[in-house]
Image (cartoon, rainbow, N blue to C red; front, side):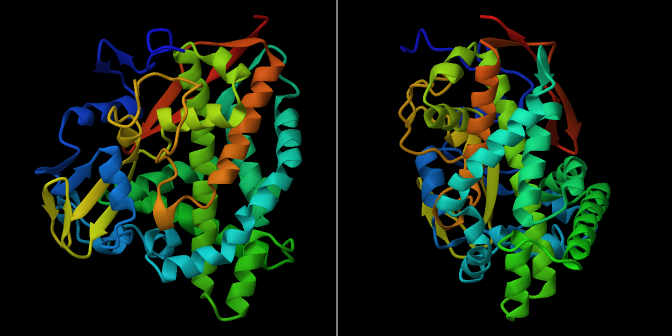
Length: 398
């Protein structure tokens, strides 16, 4: 497929970004790959190579909830960033603590275990789609129940907990970016507290052997972690395992439809299709780091204590690395994208997210020869987070 034949970016019109998180960040490509934002007093990194280098730089700490701040936080009421629970998440800690905590739950995402889950995921997707002969809501009918039920099963939580994840996730997501707002802190803390209560209730009875809660409880009994770490790690896996995957499935379908590229989803090699969709519209647009020592990058000097925003979504559209980056090309050969991060903090659940997305897209493609949107996607703003609520599609015979 040539650049002129390939579907163009669905969120851009004459180079003017539309109201979509992906497109909102794309104008950063016109600036330097590394620049200082005077208003927020943070570094913004948008170049692919610069972002890759900084993701694995030993002087950039992932512990921004403990160490990082912006002018927005300085103007707030002075409370600590995020929450005690979030500060315990292993993704917001550095080695050796990060590696030790990650190692406890790593068996959940081992390659052989993920491969063995495929039949169960296929069965679940078939069940979710069974009653929908003419079309469905990709979010409400498929992505949300699929991702919530899979992560609950992996953790060893009762299936009836799954519907609650849809309410918890936006409040936790907002807490991670707008914790300077009192209402955001209140809602986020309440969501985390409700998760803790669900986890405690599950632990009062026997949890399935090999499940996430089983692994965490054993680590606690062996004195490796504290009781609070069980709740914290469970909340991290619930949030990350549900929110990013369900969002990606919806965004993948939306991108393919708006770009006129659904035929490529149906006929392309599943892993390659998913990789290109992951690159094209990244679920996690940015991650933060804090410099623990001066860092030199792209002719700039990041000072110790400076907060750094690594713009993964923009980096994945870097024309220096990706030819025609605004083209959704399912035949693209991708050596690497940054959707799941890079280095020691590479997303532990990447293989599970790929599996769920592959199966969902495969089943949608096999159910109908084609699908078309039924109305516009429904999104809502939630304290700076754009939530894709509904994406209704109708199946067609061609």
